[in-house]
Image 1 (cartoon, rainbow, N blue to C red):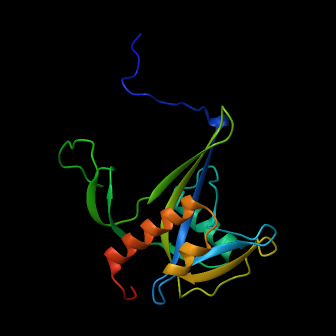
Image 2: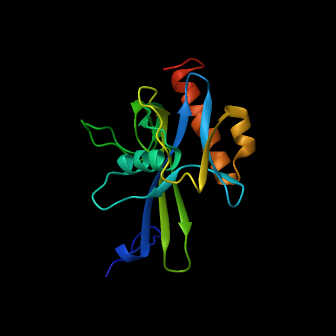
Length: 182
């Protein structure tokens, strides 16, 4: 019996939770939406569990609307990823490459839940769909959706990992779209 060449972890379906979330940008005003958790005074990003049969992108957008009341669209970005291109014309080695206009996850967070469970959170970058009026959030008693400037959002977010991720998202959005609206 051969052993894997690299360390790994393996979780059966009952031991992992798959979630998706989105960092919601309002490009025209250079703001980001965060959720103010009313009972704990924390500031977090919209995310939630992926339903069976639902794509990660669809889960991120659904959770975004359920928790913030705003509709969004996954924002195509110019960024590095280790994923191969949509159409592989040659066998490529496994390394990060720069692509333009891709809608891949910006971040994968892994949260350990005890010794035998793990939560995977796929994070996307989204833009507010200004053609759709906001709806009442399904979570309006729990959260208040608030928009903050790029600099203020980095001060507001409660968790360091969220601040690091949003800082990277701002960098990628600025590098893709510059300072103006899209």
